[in-house]
Each structure stands twice: as structure tokens, then as C-alpha cells.
Amino acid sequence: MGVYKKKRKKRNPYYYRFQHQGQIQKQEGFKTRSDATIAEGRKREEVNAPPILTIPSVSFQELSTDYLKECRIKMQKNTWRNKASVYRRFLGFIGSDIEIEMITPKQISNFLQDRALADNNSCANRDLKEINAMFNWALNQKRINSGNPAYDIEPYPEDKEHRYIPPAEDIAKVRLIASGDIGDIIETTFRLAARRGEIIHMPNSPNKSHAVTWDDVNFEQGWIRLSTRKRKGGNLEYDYLPIAGGLKDILYRRWKQRDRQAPYIFTYTEKDLRKMMLALCNQAEVKPFTLHSLRHFAASILNDANKSINQIQHVLRHRRQTTTERYLHLMPNRLQEAFDFLDSDKSVTHCNAKARKGDAKK
Image (cartoon, rainbow, N blue to C red; front, side):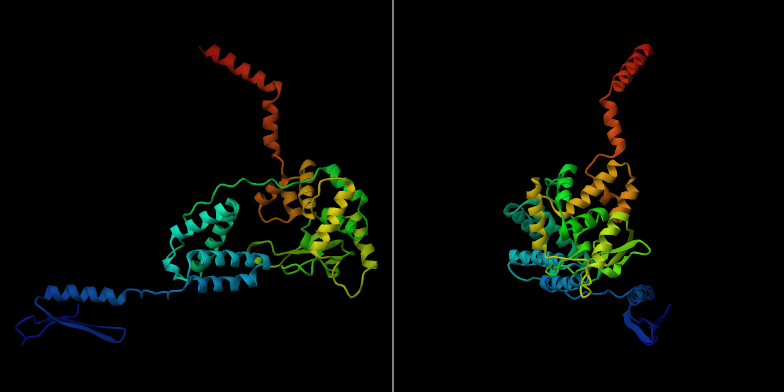
């Protein structure tokens, strides 16, 4: 310990002195050696403690702008535009741009309550999701140290809408009368269980196009390469799928008739696609459905054919099995078997047997 006494000093003669990282640390004027020793220990703890990092304060508008810049790089246009609209509405709700540390859970709750009353609970929950996303990003980037004020806010209850999946006979009627480009689009989408944007190049779409091109088709080896950004991080990922005989015939016919200046297999605007599908459904006299319904229907008939969840997951190219299960719109086989048992004579027999067994114990 670096505690010393000045011999010629009668009052408060003790002092401490030590060197830390090339700098002399010294303090005089202690009455006893014990006082100086305690003070030296405190000083050593102070200089050896890790520095406290202070994060400069940032406003809500500045933080949301920086977050959206990163979203524009990683996400589809519709995604980051929706986020931007949420942050603009929240900024308008609080009335002025304020420091991020001043935003309270109560402010966010009031904003969401107004949103739910003006629109619906689903809209409010989507806004909550986007506010959470921004604050979590800021925490991961160490842009704020005040925590996420939306973390403990519970979402509102929602009445989930059941997506309409057309019955097999309606799809059969539409496929029967579809011809030309729209017929090829329907068959390609259905036989690959693909997303619309993976098959059709839509020049006016706000999202970055990743539709299949002729460079993505290999007739000799019998595969087609589809790409998607609908996975975590927004990276463009590729999947190689086998081309069955009927689909191969369709694509080969189109390849022979292709415009050599056009790289995409199909090119249509979103508006034209909607018009063509609506006209086909009206002509077939069925309830209108979209191209995406074909993907859900493909999953359902694979499930009807007793294909495993794992097989269907790979066909749909989902990273999580829970996502695939939402596509099936049917009860799992084991659950169906359980209800079949309850509805059968076997359950009555089983119940009577248990009752007799209970009587015998008495």
C-alpha cells in the first residue's frame, strides 16, 4: 500500500501516493494511517473500474430514419414503406420530435389504442410489431441504453381471417378453360407450388424482382431454380427444384417460342394478372381466387395424399415446419384419428369396459 507520513507535519500528516497507467495518484491531509489506507483503496477501485460508456441522445425521427435506411437495403419496398408509415403516424401522434429516452410505454399504448379504435386491432398489432422492431434494432446496434418501452405491451386480441382456399372442383374448372399465357402461368405456379413473384416478373411491382429467368432452367438436368427474399435477413436465396414431365413440356414449348431479348419466362403487371384471374373465374362461374391460392391448394392436396409434413415443407420451401402447418388448413392425422375414435362405437365399448372395471373394484 502507498500510505506515507510526513514527519514534520503535526496535523493530518498521512497521505497516499501510487502510480496507475503512468499517472501519479496522490491525496494528502489524513489524520490517521487507517483513513489514508481506506481512501487509497477507494481511489484504486475508481481508477481500475471499467469506463462507463455514455450513448449520445438521439431523437425518435433520427433513430427511425437510420433504421429505415438499413431496411431499404435489406427488405422489400412494401415492407420498409409500411414501417415508415407507422413511424410517421406515431410522430404525428406525439406532436413533436423528442429524445428517444423520453418516449414512454403509456405514449405507445395510447397511440395503439387510437389506432385500434380508428381501424382495427390487427392494424394496431402490426404497428406494435414495427415499433418493437425499431427499438430492438437500436438496442442491438447500441444506439440506445434506455431499453424498449414497447417490450411489455400486450397485443390486442384478433379475429383471424381464414384464407379462402377454393375447392378442387373450382380449380379444376379454371384449369380446364385456361389457355395461352395465363394457362401456362397457372400450371407453372401450381406444379411448383410457387409464390407468384417467383414465377412472374412484374415490372410495376414496388418489390425487387426475383422472378425466374431462362438462365434458371436446365432442361438437360431437369431442374429449375427459384429465388426468394421471404426469409430472415432479406437475403436472396435460391432453391433447385426438379421439373416433372408435364411442366417440362410447358417450359420447353415457351423456350422455343421465346423472345430472345426477354430474360423472364413470364412478364405481366399485377393489375393485368388480377384482371385475367377474375375473368377466368367469372367464365368458369366459380368464386374468384388468386394465384397464391394455388400454392395453398397444392399443400392441401399433398396432405390429402398422406405426404409427410417434411416433404410438404420442402416443396413449399419453408424454413420452419410451423409455417407449413399453417398452409395445410386441415387437422393433423393423429388429431383426426382421435376424433374419429370418439365418434365411433369403439369409444362406447371402451367407456363401458372402464365402468365395469370400476364396479369390480368396489
